[in-house]
Length: 411
Image (cartoon, rainbow, N blue to C red; front, top):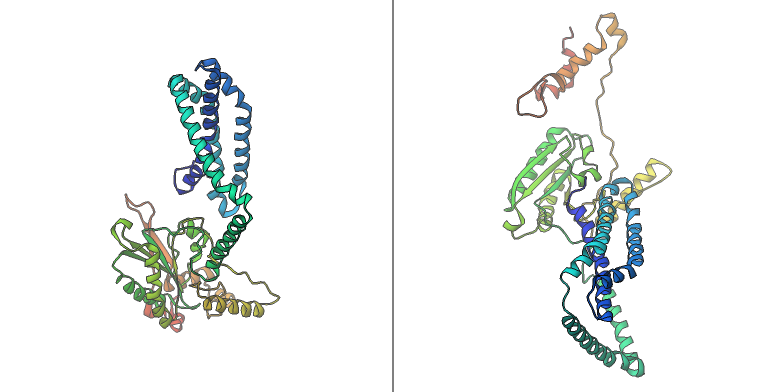
């Protein structure tokens, strides 16, 4: 089902302006008919609702028809857009029934006297006359006097050009959505491809020590060589694929916004300025990832490169990356290209193994037990949801020496 979260609340906010339209139309027509007939009878109210019934139904169905196509959006935006037509359409249908059933009944129950209605009409008429005189004094000279009209038109043009020039002069910051103030943000660490996990862990440890110097930071959690728990933003950014030894994530938890003076966006800027020199010195690349106020995207700006061969694509991607890095408004420029790196692959000589009566499965199991990753079993507790696995492996100092693998006994 749908919950009243930020996504669903957007649907309600979007439809709140049209929720009351049906009731307003019905009440205004009832009010008009009461003044025309000179009485507040039930029959007059019924006729007033009947007069505007068909147009109100058509207007409501038109709004629903305009909202429904958003429910057929596919891809990652589908779950984000689906609550808008669902909740908006239900709210419009409910408002239609309320306008036809509850609104006339409630208007009849709390109807004022004719004297109050006539007094309200006179007051509204006076306000209308005042507004009419105001607009006549303001608009008539613009139409009848050419000097005033041309001066007003030139003034509008100058104001328009001034407002447009603010973007060119970068006097104002262009933002599609206002920045949010979340209690957390992430720091993604990328080492050169092929970097061992201990090296990546040491880099993450140094970065974490610097992060703890920020007063607003409450807690840190690092994930090296494994994907961190991801949310909707991480799902779009493919955070679940960050499971290589040269990849790491640091989840930074900061205090509640009521208990700190700086917003999460300001702290993210401070974090980037603090960690970038250290990361460059250690040969790492970092990305400070904030929770977006709107729909999540893969990146703020993404350039896709297509070419006839791998060398051309790599060269063009490197040039575009340098352009992004040189731009003043971009930060954390990176690419998804993988540099070549050395990896070890053990292949069993099946002929020799068969002559010695050793199966390939036995050799693979021995290597897995030595290098790590062999699961002996698991331990289950009453409160734990998932079991804890027991791994068997040699110490790191011995696993790092591939030459000693040949001395492993094979039963």
